[in-house]
Image (cartoon, rainbow, N blue to C red; front, side, top):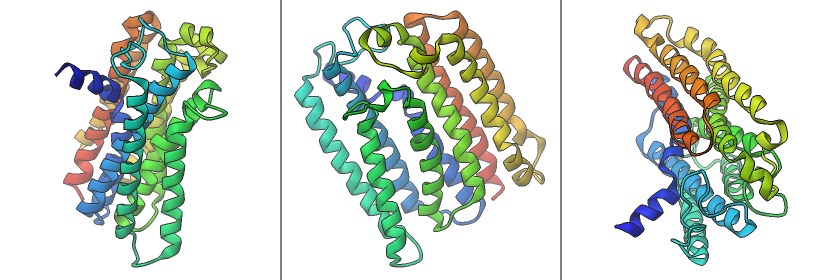
Length: 304
């Protein structure tokens, strides 16, 4: 039981809404457009969650190897750093899970429409390879992205644009401008989860030579970016709501209203918190994102 709990901490359940939200929004859009298919939808959900867990495992392993993580850190407990998980074990599990993720990705090709279109297959294979590479390049390789203030860009692309746009494509066989808009909005929300993480770890990261965006630009700029990202996400989706919800009841406005209030409250707490007190806010930011996603998803399903 203890070992299970240790691995569960390594999975970082609090952050999983980041990958889950983009896929759910895409599936909601597919349902609204009458193009939803269950089997590829399940594959997309599994692929997104597995890819994020691979990235989380890689982050823990490579941050330990580089010395960026230390025992007794302010952030959540890291099993490898604390000696609860052997580095070699984490590396083997990470590689095995990456291989399994690739298998799920290949299974998605069977659902690409129309028929045996090899250009579509090639496009999805390239996207899948990039997801696998960047899942590790975030913390590893000759130029780790999270060490050079590029973590937020990576999250925006691979937890916002890619899951929404290409989940919609796999499930429906087509691209949709609303999926692109939703991907941008989800990307901004996902970036906020990383901002809280780096906001908390700024002193440790600076000491370890890890140049996150918060180390480069400072906490005040990160706090402002956090606030603006939430409002930008809502602003970008305004056109989407106007187009999709004009025939729906007023309660469908619940999603943006609830999210904005939660977002602003979390930002106020962020400004007043330091160290381990920021840990609950990381989960709260991911929770806000998931609540927004579910509130947006309900009318998409009900009125499709």
